[in-house]
Amino acid sequence: MAFKAIRGFKDILPDESPDWVLVEDTARAFFASCGLQEIRTPVLEKTAVFTRGIGEHTDIVEKEMYTFQDRNGDSLSLRPEATAGILRSVIEHKLHANTSVLQLFTMGPMFRHERPQKGRLRQFHQIDVEYLGTDSPLSDAEVIWLAWNIVSYLASGELRLEINSLGCPECRPLHRKDLDIYLQNNGQQLCDDCRRRAKTNPLRVFDCKNQECRKLLLTAPLMKHYLCPGCAQHLGLVLDTLEAFNIPFVQNPYLVRGLDYYVRTTFEIISLELGAQSTVAAGGRYDGLIKDLGGPDIPGVGMAIGVERLLLLLEERQGVEPVDLFVAMLGKDARTELLPFIAELRNRDISVRYSFDDKSLKAQMKAADKAAARFCLIVGQDEIDRDIAILRDMDSKEQREIELDSVVQEVQKLIFHEKDIEP
Ligand SMILES: [Zn+2]
Ligand SMILES: [Zn+2]
Image (cartoon, rainbow, N blue to C red; front, side, top):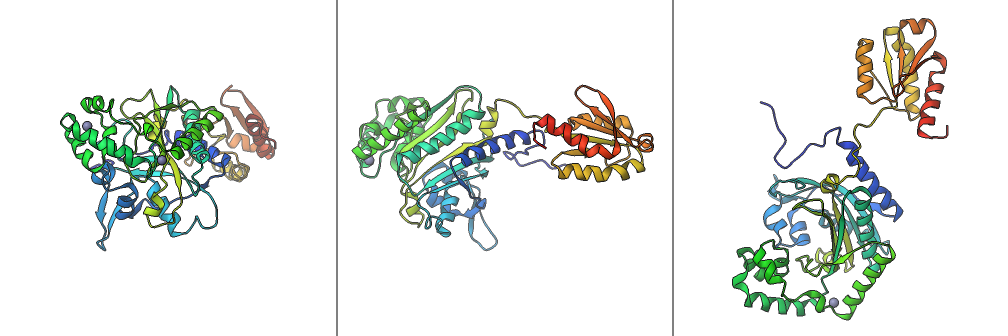
């Protein structure tokens, strides 16, 4: 019997990896430009970290988590997102104590038991940013700046940044009260899910895809009309900063996060090229969450980029990573002579492959092609007797003889010239 990967879990194959490296390297470059630090937390946490950190009345916690009892009877869950685990770690190690603002990022797999479809897997990957310890609108804008830059640097097609304010514990209850009344008065027009949501988590009605519900929401009370002066000013400063950064945005008063500790700024980056799963990045401010998880009362704002969705939009496919040099060797003497040179070239940052088996020249040249080698060295018994090697340019197909003793210098010169590196 041949095994297959679990449904919704996908292998990232060698010819796909260069695209992943490109996405990760791009993100790291932008993070370095803002002075972020990397944190890596376990994929497995106590279930309570997520029920508290994400909220009990959310689809994620209610229906989508991989939760099980371990051999000690503890309830554990695979992380469905990155924030809760990072905050658990920050609190546990008091990372916030020695610095005014923590600027953290992580990247890695997350797990949700959803119905798999294009752009949605059960093991999926996120690039995640958390800024902790500041409630300045500038930090909201910087987190959005990072998301926007990483996504727009890599993605083809039209992108849209949508932004909204969810208010704060001061002004939100007024909106909530009017929304409750509105939903009660119009309850018969809501779908079954929304009738339930209206009781547990009314803001989530705004996420409903049902046409009737959407129609009803067109005339529902919107948070933007209830913002207190502090929240209105915060939003204004975030938008001003985005303008200063030259980032185009649209305000979407229907954009919500259905959790109490999400406050003020919330945003999404949407691709107009993708179908149903069109959100490439999302985030927002969550000032009450760290305290809720048993930590100090410090504010936070963060974002996550969906790597699989970004890969669907990648401007240029990377293809096979080429190797600098392939060494085709025929016979035992050739190997004895060439292996030290191969080691020396690798020490000088030149990538080298060669055939491990004693194959024909034709087979070795085929392997060189497959490795996308830029140059090839060909050495058989005849060349060893004459103290030379044949150097072949795999693009132009030109060949010339070089002295065996100068192989390392000659190859290094060529490759460095090719890559524009100072020797
Ligand atoms: Zn407010
Ligand atoms: Zn609905």
